[in-house]
Image (cartoon, helix red, strand yellow):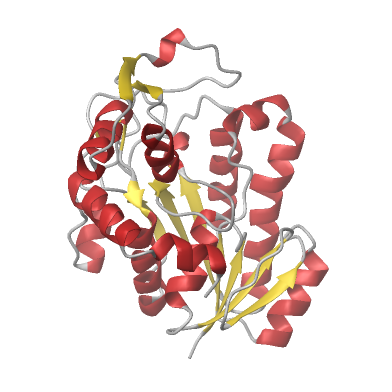
Length: 302
């Protein structure tokens, strides 16, 4: 059984990786936030601490590292670019180096924010990235460093689903607020390819199994606006409340946003021999998991 180190294990993707893959791999988690889950070995440390991570990798004989830890708040990145660079670029660069030293596969979780958003049609891996935000710029810088390693894999993605402990994800937030009969403003002019986190974890598991390397987009099969995704969630859950069409241009954000973040995932589907889900497929699976109490089990670390 492979030993897999997950950085940012207390975050949404990291916690779901630990929860869903702990029977398939020996999961070792690292995070500055507290984390507790049956069957997962946890180290309360920062992935920025290179010496500590090297000690963990050597002690646990790590075969693969899935690097989920990042500063993902785009406005916070814009306000503190030095810190964003340290977290999103330097940390990835150092982990990539350690993976080369210890002959471990390195999987770097990147973002659709590396694309300019100005293209007509879906963004492909062959397109020249041109991020407009500090967040996207630091992630692209990390990608360029990571891809110097022939055993590294970069996944450009956007996800939603269930979060760990008292945190809420986009999907959980929409359900929670609409149940309170709130009015939500959601953008009709932002297209993206959000993938249910459970689906993304399954793909990461396949990538570990097959030692996939290179650069891939991974998202739902067809793009959708944030407004339409919100309406899908409302309809599937049968929720009250109101979702109002809004334009991102009507809001003053610290960091610039882009309109077209849709991902062409043909390359990944061909490589893995899979068919990615449609937005409605994922929304229905999200509701099914919600009804089955998946979120409660994840949050309790059972």
